Image (cartoon, rainbow, N blue to C red; front, top):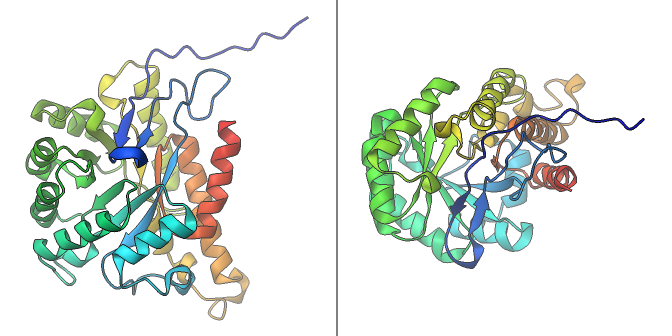
Length: 314
């Protein structure tokens, strides 16, 4: 007798959002079932990877991360170009760490110039990240939006406290918003609602649920992302049907397990392999929880995840 499989009845769908402009624009979202449940639904746009580029010295990075980019670490446009030409990057995640009020506190003008140079160097979509400072991000990202009108950047993190300034800038200059909230379903829905009331269109909105690295809160992140996807796909919650972006690289590589040398703790094994494994494992869990875009750092970790995405999407 034939076995009849029980299938979930999905009533919702993740919206499609286009990132970037022109021939290299990338479309994310569109799934109408749980992550990689291809026996129940469709995954028209498999998850994508955005590669990190920092606009300031990367003293916080372990040597394993610096090594592949040693020749370009102080030159963001050259760094982005190398990622595209050598590593096949489809998207760049430009981190404006230089504007951190607790660091270099660079002004908006210098940050805008950096963004413009990176955009001139590559034609792939660019996600522009501030430093999680409500006031400084509002000031800088608003000017970035104006200077790069029509390029359909992703601007984030957009938080409740600065959503009006950044949301209005994204609307006026035709960019996409990355709504960021602490790991909480209700807060995510609230911010999406506020941005919608402001006038941000559904096809210009991405969600950043925030994440922890493996061993540092990933279980809580996973469960909240599951609830995000349950709300979107089976609970008919239209405010939660946006693609998810997970900014995992800094969370992984700042941990002591990723930074600790083999000399300091021989039982931990070789540091480079350990860090790459931590990044790949974290990315794997986030994919299974529903991530549509992963922000990653090390080429070997990215290669592993690209292979995994290809296999799970087949």
